[in-house]
Structure formats: C-alpha cells, structure tokens
Amino acid sequence: MREIFESTIERLLADTVTPELLRGCDAGQWPQALWEAVEESGFALAGAPEALGGAGASWEDLYVIVRSLGRHAAPVPLAEAMLGNWLLGQAGLEAAPGVLSISAQGTLTLQDGRISGELQDVPWGRHAEHVVAVTGGPSPTVVLLSTASSSEHQLRLNTAGEPRDTLQWQAATPVASAPLPKHLQADVLWLGGALLRSAQIAGAMHRALDLASQYATERVQFGKPIGNFQSIQHQLAVMAEHTAASIIAAEAAFVQADGGLNAQAAWAIAAAKVCSAEAAGIGASTAHGVHGAIGFTHEHVLHLTTRRLWSWRSEYGTLSTWAQHLGQRAAQAGGAGLWPLITAMGTAE
Image (cartoon, rainbow, N blue to C red; front, top):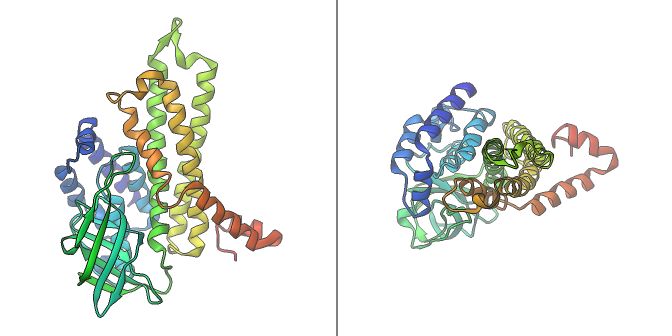
C-alpha cells in the first residue's frame, strides 16, 4: 500500500502543484481543481477504518503522503483531513468527505448537546467545510463541526501565506460527536499536528536541498560552478545531514504512531519535531546562502519552500517546547531508565 500511495501522490502533485498555482494561492485563491483531484484519490479518507468509510491505512503508510505534501508545498489541508478522519474513526464516527480541517487549540465546551467557544489556528479554516476538534473539560469529546454554523471568522495567514483562521461557535449543534477514546489523550490533535509538520518539513527540506544543489552546479563564478568550491560543498553536506536526519526521525515517529497518538508516541514525535525544527532553520538559511541574492527575490521559487519551513517549525509546538518535553521525560526516567526510554522509543516509563 505504501508504494502505491507514494507513486500516486507524487505523480498527482508533480502534475498539479506548480509555482503559478502556489503564487495564486498566496493571493487568496482556493485550488479547487487540486482539491478535487486529491479527494478523488481517496487520500483524505485513507486513515479511517474501512468500516467507517476509509481505507484503514497505517500511519507508516500515510507517512509518504505527508512527506510528499511538504516536498511539493501542496496548498490544501490534506494532511489535516487525514488526521481528522483518523480521529473520527478512532471515536467510532464515520469519515467526513469534503474539505476537512482540524484545530488543536481552542476553548470549546459541550453543554446539552450544543457547542460554544473558539478554535484557533484552523488550517484553511475559511475554505473548510468541517473541522474536527476535541472539547475541553473533564469529559473530552471528539466533535465534527460545520464551518457554516460558526458565528464568526477571524482570518489570518502564517509566514508562508497559508490560512490559519480563528472560528467561533455559539450554541451550535455538532454534525457528529462521541467521547474521546480512553486510549487517547485530550491533546491528541496537538500530537498529531506535530507529527504531520515533522514529515512536511522533511519533504520541504528535501526540496530545498535539491534546489540548492541544482543551483550550485549551474551558477558559475571565477570560471567554475560554485558547487566546486569547498565552502559550498561543506554547506550542502551539512544541509544534507539535517535533511536525512529529519526524514528518518519523522518516519520513526509515524511508525511509533501506529501504536496510538498517546504518551508513548509523544517521545518519538517530540524527537522528530525537535529534529525537523532545527533542520528547517539551518536548511532555509543554507539554501538562501547558496543561492545568494537571487534566492531572496519573489520571482524565484525558493521562497515557496523556505517560507513553509519557517512557518511549520513553529506550528504545534516550537523546538524549545518539544525539547523541554524530551528533557522532562528523560529526567523522570532517571539514569537507569534513560537508555530503555531511548531504545524503546518511549515505551518505558
């Protein structure tokens, strides 16, 4: 299944996500044709159980899709839709077709079957038809909300120009709801969001490295390609190391997530987010350094990748946030428990 997913999504995105499309999305356009192609592929429902309208794919299988979304800077909430439908399935709810997003930050309350409160930083909230979230309080509930029933929209963009909107509801009836399964934490969407961004950064790092390497072979200075200079080779080698590390760390976290997005998976997810966030800063800086002045122009395609690296590294927890998580877990494990904690990827307490 994984090989089929990878070849299909790569072919789909390579054919449809062009610099012209991305620049149009920067100007506020919604890529309807791209979303229709994505939805027709069935990827948005892939993580949901077969009995509830999905394909029952594992997170390990889904990894290649999310990484490809980052590599091509796909301007649609496909990764969020996969996570949202996975969570609906975990709660025993049917998968939701159409443009689906998530929110891991908010103040939702459920009372007498009605939802009130606010959801923040909803990816593509202005274009989404539904949003999956978890209510607060002592009895967390998974809810599927219609954006048409929201009482207010506050529109904002991240550094990459991607919508990250705030939506509010007042005594609205959810489309569907169910108690959060006991094997999942209330911050399941926060963990899942960090998982997604780590893989997207890994894909974007791969793209930035390709662009920098290609430019280094084409740009001639002092009679030879700049890629022949040792200083440039060293920078690209360091960037390649961080790219490889982010790819491996993200894939390891996706494998661990098949056991559930819980405290055990959080160790691997934290490591992946720290690794990818560090790589994003170094990778974007190196790519622009290799390209020189041309890399800073709006006409060049490099910023379509690096602006996403800068944005995604801070979403669903910064490097410092997740580094603190790792440090706290390591301190709790103590000297005797640290090695088992590392080698078991978080299964040791």
